Length: 259
Ligand SMILES: NC(=O)c1ccc[n+]([C@@H]2O[C@H](COP(=O)([O-])OP(=O)(O)OC[C@H]3O[C@@H](n4cnc5c(N)ncnc54)[C@H](OP(=O)(O)O)[C@@H]3O)[C@@H](O)[C@H]2O)c1
Image 1 (cartoon, rainbow, N blue to C red):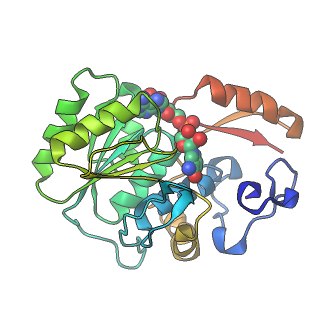
Image 2 (image 1 turned 180 degrees about the vertical axis):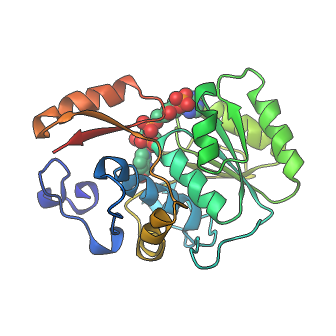
Image 3 (image 1 turned 45 degrees about the vertical axis):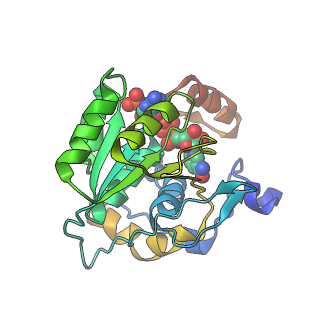
């Protein structure tokens, strides 16, 4: 939260961190904290991407994502919404959470992951998974979306790099446009039929999910702590090494430092 508040006491590199009560939930005792750590940041980003209603800006000229989808409910599980969403980077921590929450509101989720991570993405609720290394990725994704018929929402790009943007834009061009919500500033100069925006995890859209959904959904195994942890090491002094590990790239894993 330091990024938002500027207060050193909101920093994460501490034995005890300050967390806003409305963006926290009880972790069931059956779940280890090393697993539960996959939830909070990714949930903030996913909730921003899926549930925000009001327009806004992350920074000047960069719109905040606002797809305005309904919140998941543990009491009234969704049936099929007839809508389809593509999650680019479905095995990432953010992509896994977007997939789980979108599937929980009855959306047909098509994810793009590495070939080794199809099973993980299916556990998150993906209806179809396509390999990001497939040379025919655009045609394959477009064909799957077409199979689900009308109701295409767009792409949530959890990776948001110079590698993913051209593919995402080619998919949207073939499908007549839609949302492109990215975890980093979106590409500039997108076509008029593309609604490009950025997600930002420090966002009030996650509050109802933390308050009403997270704990019962974890207890009922309707929300899973995915991807699994890669416990790097122990102690605050290990954080820099863990960051190097993360920078080198991980596949379907959440790098964790135990304190
Ligand atoms: N804006 C925000 O508020 C916010 C919040 C959280 C994170 N982020 C950002 O969002 C990004 C994702 O964060 P994260 O923690 O979720 O990442 P992560 O879990 O570390 O991501 C690792 C995954 O990225 C996937 N990946 C890499 N290149 C890919 C490609 N070309 N196509 C599809 N998948 C690809 C890998 O998939 P495979 O192994 O299957 O190939 C791997 O499983 C980061 O850049 C992070 O800084 C932003």
